[in-house]
Image (cartoon, rainbow, N blue to C red; front, side):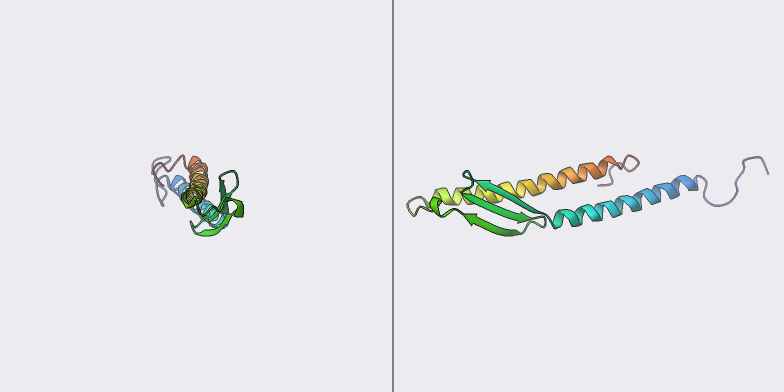
Length: 116
């Protein structure tokens, strides 16, 4: 047999095993990141703190707080706008944090382009 010839197993198998270990590690990191995001609450206030919305990482609304001073029966539309602004702001915070975390995770995926 020629020097350096086939010795059984997979040619380049060490590299494939290394890639599999990397993929498993990335999957574990992804699961951990997902659990952390799901257990995080995102708060956003509108109207200078008049309305606060809290959204969980699973996109469930967990709280709406309204300053009683902002409740004006003559101007319900303003209150509705503040509530929508607070909810949408909290959702955007959750989305931004998720995107930021995914970008960090993908940064470590140099050998796996297009995986996510």
